[in-house]
Length: 183
Ligand code: ADP
Ligand code: 5GP
Image (cartoon, rainbow, N blue to C red; front, side, top):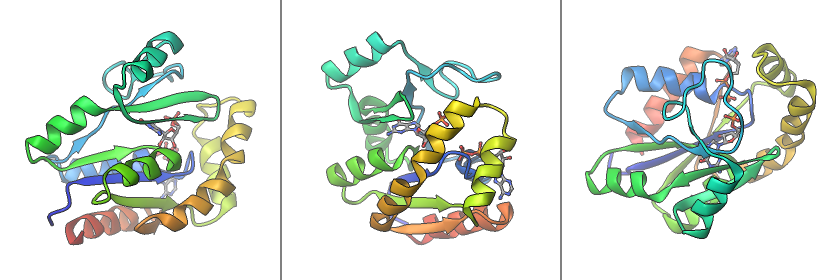
């Protein structure tokens, strides 16, 4: 295992966060990048834990000052990965995981061809929609915006190094572990 930067992407509600939590519980030496976003915190989310929650002005300031390794607009909000933390982890020889959207993932691959891109796919589109709705964190308009992204995300996934289907949660976590250990 000598690859150091792993990027996990997948459609909203597919279970990226859940699979990654399972992975991190078993592999605590991995660093999980905390992104910046302009979206509002969901109940239970905390600044500096789930995201750094920025105003639109603060986010634009980071863009203007070249602070982001990558950033993208997703379903009406902006999301970005700060360069500083990633570069520090890599300099310290730590393995780092980014959980970002497919546009951002392809930007990272361009700059860091050694990055391993892993796409988490749903067992079916029906299951994806049921999970997104079942989470009860988004209103209907937001759910529709997120579902509208799915087709283009699946298209971009063709450029990824690996696709893992999140059917059975434990199986998907085990496959992610195996994939990262063999990378
Ligand atoms: P994402 O981070 O990709 O947006 P989440 O991790 O929040 O998705 O998961 C969305 C919903 O799907 C959550 O309610 C979660 O409990 C559920 N979920 C995740 N993985 C599975 C799975 N393998 N089978 C059934 N439900 C799942
Ligand atoms: P959510 O609002 O559900 O937390 O995230 C929405 C989407 O934004 C997900 O696809 C998630 O992976 C993506 N995302 C989170 N952080 C970043 C980031 O730093 N950069 C990019 N490009 N996408 C991100």
